[in-house]
Length: 441
Image (cartoon, rainbow, N blue to C red):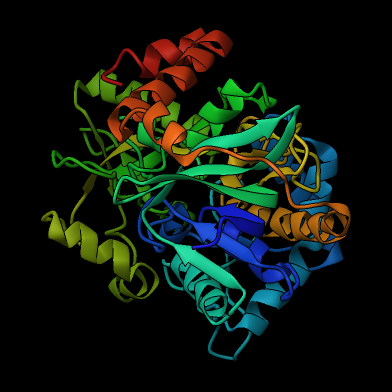
């Protein structure tokens, strides 16, 4: 493989893929991912993607986003995301994303917790998969884009607050430098440092640990969202998420007596806290979710994937109450960026869940994540297209034998990175640290 690229993109979720597609075809682009290409959290997004349906909905959409974020959002970022959403949706549809439609052919909109209007587009209950697959198909058709699976970023090549590329390690254990004019971190969140998370375990915050090491600005590292409804299971591995849209369509949350105890459409942090309190009150590791009062056809049509997964655990969604428990789900903080995804380190960008432009505030509004990733990835590509014209390829020599011996194995690296992140979370928010780290993490 080459050692020099115009652009390195670390991550193959929607943020990384969309950035690659928005960059000019004359650039030589490398994309790497720590696991399989399709094992990104973007693939798992069930609910949908928000869009500004018309100008009359702007104030309502803006207020819903700000309210969910406890008014700690960056207002400029929120406005940009909302205003640019229609053009993002049009672009996705041109790429071939097939959103659900009503019988008359019009786009079908739903709503989820925290939304005051129906403004969420979806494809069944696998919207993230539909978008990611479509973007990946287009990326794979491009001759100027190379994708390497099972290749991990283990270090940044930084000098005088200027990023020149990364140090990578492949599945054979070979460690090597890759140089670039521009580097984009799109490695997702930090769910892998938690015992219970809806994220893939390998998405464990490598970018944040490296940012801490290089004193690249981090923002709101303690703003970590807990999803209220994941399928309770004694099996190990990633927690299965039961989408916000299930409650948006009328699901009930019930205690051990079969009684509702919370307004199911309140923001996620409020619902999660209520579930935790109810679990303590019931002295059980779960509460129940029920949609059995809804028409069977509606359940099977709207939530076929969720229905199948629950059935695998022995629960028929059309008849049974399903045990659910909160789990770590989304990271609102991240590497601090401006509204073009530029970090505090020159020629280093962070997009998607890895970057933090403040759009989500303290708590993300449902179905804003895919949209935010796409809007600011496109803006990153626009900025880089201009910047790269005036950037030379770095002239740095790194001895491959020296770096191979310098870094520990992946297990050592994981423990080092995990410790760095948890220490920073503890420094910022000891209450959150005590609740999550001391409970098995």
